[in-house]
Image (cartoon, rainbow, N blue to C red; front, side, top):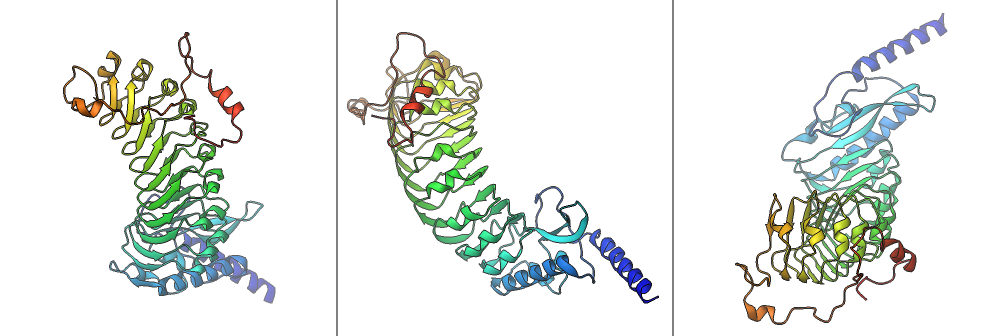
Amino acid sequence: MEKTTLLLLALLLQILATEAALSVGGGVGVGIGVGVGVGSIGGGGGGPQASKLNRAYTALQAWKSAITDDPLGILKTWVGSNVCAYRGVFCSDSQDYMGNPTGPVVAGIDLNHANLQGTLVKELSLLTDLSLLHLNSNKFTGSIPETFKDLSSLTELDLSNNQLSGPFPTITLYIPNLLYLDLRFNSFSGPIPEDLFNKKLDAIFLNNNHFDGDLPQNLGNSPASVVNLANNKFSGNIPFSFGYTGIKEILFLNNQITGCIPEGVGSWTDLQVLDVSFNSLMGHLPDSISCISGIQVLNFAHNQLSGVLPDLVCSLSNLLNLTVAYNFFSGFSQDCSKLSGGFDFSLNCIPGVDMQRPQPECSAIPGGGLSCLRIPSPKPFVCGTVFGAQKASVSPPTSPSHQ
């Protein structure tokens, strides 16, 4: 009789927990991923799931105590042990290795645009089921705790538009399943590590910080589809490895990059956007750019590039916008002027064309002694004929391509 009573009580608690998990709570933002729900964990339960939710309670309360300003009153809901009812905290039903449901866990935190002020705390590493942590547009200061390496389920980390500082947070490279890293609009400084481009990240956003130093030579190893390095203080050359992956968008604009655009750019056949504007690049554009058949936007403005724009570049079938303003180009083909989306060639050195540099500026073209790698041939340029030889002759790459 006693065993029957205990079984009925356990069943009743399970039903109550299930019904509570289906209820809808408030959240700060949207877009935290498919399968992440909002709900309540109910009032009972024991075992591993209760232990996980207890750890989540410990983590969130520790973090709450480190937040010094909450102008929107979001943390007023962070009261009590029912963490799945906290505003901005999202729970999901979990399963064991056999596929059996085991109850809710904290799977996402979305506090975008909450305007919170404070620091990140080491206790957040207790949220081992957390897959999404979105904290953009707040006022968090300090650095990222070393314990973040224990966030074994984390796939998306968005800390953009805060006031975080210090060197590149290398601890992010030890988060085992991270795919999306967004550190833009902070105050990080110093060089970025080579290991960043060896990780399986699909998106890397480092723009609008104070990073400096040379770009790592293994940049082309990255499997990321988007790499944004804009508005920093990077110097040196674009690495020779540039172009050896299936990247779709890469932004170098507004740095201090010098040297040539390497021939290897042409092997980046999936590239759609390339922006190297506002740097100090010199020399001619390589014909291999014509191999980027899917390119839609090319921005070379505000550099010191020269020579004649290759006919093959302007004839790219998907090219919508080509900007070469504020360089030292001396000519272009008629195909360039036919671009439907726009072709900006102002402030160059093209004879007989309006809105060009005054002649004295064109008499001494910067980088005249710089010899960028070009493949002279009496035959028409054929995509794919030079990259194999380049890869074979440089392993690993030890110098830029302008030798």
